[in-house]
Image (cartoon, rainbow, N blue to C red; front, side):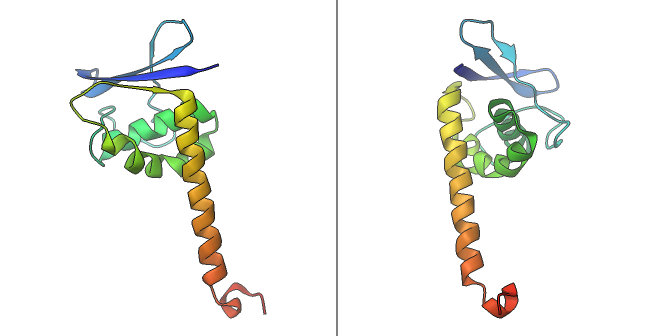
Length: 130
């Protein structure tokens, strides 16, 4: 099922911006910040820069769409820098789950490629391949 995420740059709760998720025609519900996985920002979500509020948002989005806490933790910082930090901090935004999954898969593929390139560049005597 396609899910829609919306960000509203109006302060709520402990000071963060409101972010909701909606499945199909269901009502919008607040996105779980997933502070249980990593408490970057006890003050809530933010976007438009590279700080703790955007990190919490990236983690929450990744955890929600993936349904896998470990993958979400691994990908949330790259997601913060390539998406969340680039959003206009004063404007609302909308993101569908298919687009978000595509971004995450691209980030994971890039991370695998980088790890493989680094591994092959390591001299065999350091890898233990002798």
